[in-house]
Length: 245
Length: 240
Image 1 (tube, rainbow over the protein chains, first blue to last red):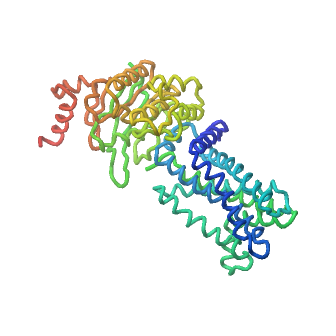
Image 2: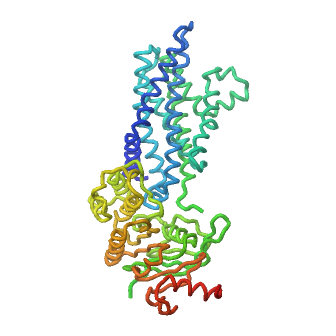
């Protein structure tokens, strides 16, 4: 791995995102708008439902957005020939993957800072633990989304197929992450499955942060999410081949 | 006697269950412009990919300066331009080059030099996606010039270019060859043949001629390479 090359990839990806004003705006504004919608939806309901659902949503946005953006951009990189060109240059596979992870991690940091700030200070999300840690979990989720997006892009031939991986990879995780039914109340089989899905740990981390000041569990969950991200990057590296048939 | 930079031995490549390259043997010398001519679909791009080391080989070897094509020490010494422009459409020409120069670890000044060489100074700050096809392929060519490679593999670099620019690019290829590089250029346009020091004529995965343009014409007793090509094919399969 060469830091110079990794940083070059990250800077280039960020320039591309910046150049695409619509995507950049969507990445930053959309999570805020959706958090506001969630808050508004629960306005006339008894109980503090925003506090129950809000944290899970904060975990999901960076994951979903980065998954989609990464799977489409890497696919484009494969089909335009730029990936082949880079792999014929002194570029390590981990430089390429790491560059993407760093760039989208940075974009997620900005996205999370906006969404968390809005949720906590304007929409009144009650966070018992350290607020900054919410942001850290969000960045880990984004890196996870990026890593999975890089991995699945190897199995898609077209952008349509890449987008279809979202219902396959992302929606089951949303259903099973404990947002709708607490994971401990699920049928045993589903509970077991939810135990091996990374989004479950991301959601757990967010929910723990909101409800207690105890952070040991959050760090453990965060570690698990990062573990999944590293594993997905490793699998992604395995799908990048210098020589293709 | 010039040294041979590239040595291809009994190269066979299958793609998608079809034999694309059928046992090729040839050498590429340093300091020369070698043209690879043949109709589209004859295996030119696969051969070029094999030289760069991104093609999985079925059998045979491709060695460049003694090392296996695509091996790590060669990656900064071989420049490769694919048939379609492999640059980022959403970045400007300069941003593209600045990125690739960092990846290559080459000198930053190479960016402006490469832009000037491919005559894109007036478009340096335009987003590549808005350029014409010829301008985009020149931007792609500029990337391969950044690190002054020993071997330059160019897959149909002059397609769709204005004749003046085409002449300038061929002059550039010869300048690079004079500087010691081996330039390997493919084309399906037979009239570019005379611009090469040496020609490989290719058809259906085989090399049917390997010589200077003049000697190919003399041997086949023809006036141009297109007729020479036809004569060679008819020799092989008998007249149609």
